[in-house]
Length: 169
Image (cartoon, rainbow, N blue to C red; front, side):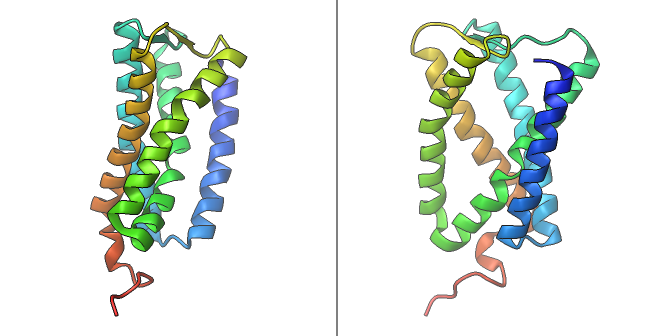
C-alpha cells in the first residue's frame, strides 16, 4: 500500500465520519469521544498487525519509514472513528445486547472482508494458511469495537444518559 492510497482512503473515511456524525446527530462531546476512541482502537489495530506479523499469521507490507507508519496509524484511526457514533446509538436504543450483537456481526463479517481485499490487492495484505489468522482477524475486529466504544463512553458518558435516550415507562 502506498502513502497516496492511504491518504485517499483516509479522506474517504473522513467524509464517512462527517456523514455518520450528521445522521447520528452526534454532539461535540460524542464526536470528540469517537475521535479519541478511534485513536485508541487504532493503537490496538497497529499492535495486532505487528503481533500477528511476528507470529507469521499475516503480512502487511510497510515502507520502512516512521512517516509511513504514522500515516497508516492516522488513517486507521480515522477509518475506525465512524463506527463509534453508530455503536453509541445502538447502545442507546438497544442497550448492551444491541452492542453485543453488533460486535458479533463485525467479528463474523470482518475476516471475509479482509480476505477479499487480500485476494484483490495482494500487495496490501497476505494471510497465512490455517484457522489462526481468521480467528486473530475476527478478534481484532471485536477488540477495536470494544476498545473504541469503551473509550468513547469514558469521554462522552454512557448512552443511557443522553438527552435523546428512551426513558423507562
